[in-house]
Length: 263
Ligand code: 1HE
Image (cartoon, rainbow, N blue to C red; front, side, top):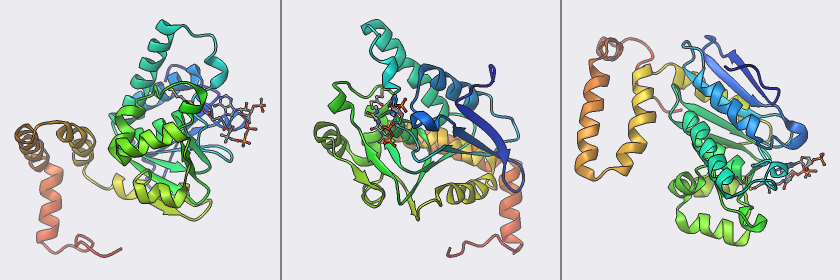
């Protein structure tokens, strides 16, 4: 990392010490994303230790993230605004297309750029206090952190349009129902659930995780015949790895714990 930033922390944890816990630590400002914090998110995800197999992203205090730091908005001209948006794209692409899957542990406000950040994660776990909104419409601005690309993939263009036109706020339950989160847990339990999922993910073959993160969203953008080809290439690479061979052998030899089981 290019130096520690006061508004973010990185801890390495989990049973095998291979989970990165990335926390926004700007609770007093509801984890609002300043330029400095966006750069720190970029640097943190770009420089995760090689031993890390999954990451959990959460926010200190009552809210996951209040979005763009509005106090920095007022001084920007159009050119600076474009570069600012592009800097978010780089940082949030680094979350989505980094080395390991990212699970966002959500609570309280997940609004504006906070929802854009959460959308860059691979899995979102919301606790019962979570609420989702895109107040950009009310602030006279537009999403700029990749939200117009990522959020419609989660909930569709019409729901996102409604959120921005009307200021609609989704509570945790409705947010999970429409696809803003994949898991809904009781108040205060999002981090523990995210860690549990991270532990599971960390046990997968790293190459499979990488293929999922990097190939799936791209295949979704490709015409079907290109998608099939990409799928064939990735599956050939994954199955050729020694790790894959060892795992399949373990199943065929009836080794304990390799069967698919109900949760
Ligand atoms: C902030 C921000 C912020 C809080 N920028 N300082 N995002 C928004 O429009 C959401 C704006 N925030 C809120 O609606 C509320 O703060 C919350 C619902 C998130 C939390 O409410 P609450 O009552 O817990 O906190 P608060 O009293 O409103 O805020 C506490 C402090 O955080 C206060 O500062 P203080 O110095 O007076 O203590 C707030 O000013 C500060 N704060 N949110 C700056 N967002 C890439 S483009 C993305 C575009 C967007 O994200 S637009 C949506 C921006």
